[in-house]
Image (tube, each protein chain N blue to C red):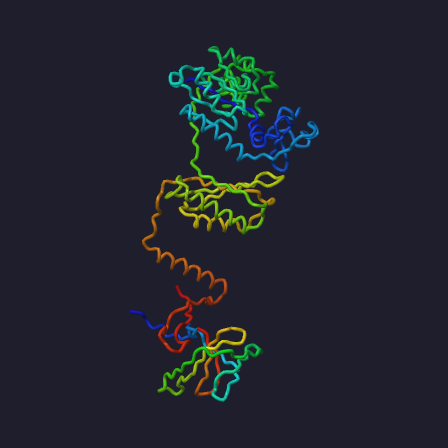
Length: 393
Length: 95
């Protein structure tokens, strides 16, 4: 099977540069929280000496005048999802292997595009040029990935037929192994894929168990893993910017009501139900604020969704004033109605009775809850018209 | 068949709404309200907007005989008051 690996290196930095072109050519370091520590998620080539996983303090000491940014992972995901959608327009088989790495099935497409070269060119054009994609083509995912790593930005390369020979000089760090196992292999003096492939499979498996057996096969150029098509969730997103940064619950709920109103009239959602809601907001000098909510039962209207979200936002603690708000409704179901109970009145009464029992247990006496009843609404004596009756559901 | 529990009946679980509240009213020679005292505040009656009488349960020991006045006080508040024609007492009534 012919597979292309589309690799976008430094996707977080390139995404930030697309959002703010002023960052181009400047040393940019993107950090993420790792427990209580801030570590480097990605950095631009201008931030010399900075590597992924380095602590923030070390990164700052190595690269002066660095622009520090907090990772906006939902944004990077959405940027990459755009590219995957674009690739899906070229091939029906696209797998998302991680942020910035996708595998594309090429079988049967060459004739349609008029040759392999045109097909690859089409894949390169599927990704915006500022992301400089690299493409590697091979008969398996791992050799395709290695081929992509060796090609330069905006270019493609193809692994030769002798895959094992092609791979042998590359470092074992390219293997999908845990950091501990890579370190172990280096301690054994095994630094290249060729060295690993030269060992008997049993010895590698004995040391690294199942992971070792798979790594050995990959080092020999054998990768029969099938492509797992990307399953993108259908979602509807709405966005607004606050006139001024806000932190008040009232303003946030008003914005949420507006976004829900807009989302529920969208044709993708109309007459259907949603199961999840995600709220994302930007906060100055902070990582974006993201809250994910799953509804107990699917929601088919703005009012019901807002009611459910309101109660959950009661004890809201915001890290700072929100600049904007993006609402994404997901888990869209095909339901066009919900079966209501034939005995809904009975159920309501049971709920009320239970509530009264709980109150009675709490107060130690009959709860002083009354219900207004019309007694003699026709009476000329006003105090005879209505009465308060002890509530007994 | 439901058995009689033979329990003593408790206090009534029904409460009347809009019970009349006794008030102090200054009246003129024709027993029309001139001023009403509400929470230690004297409010002059600016206008009598409506007037009606009820005479109910005349067969009972304490018949209900009232003259109602729908008035507007000096601060613009509408209010319904009545004079119990049997006792001569004034009451305010909501509802």
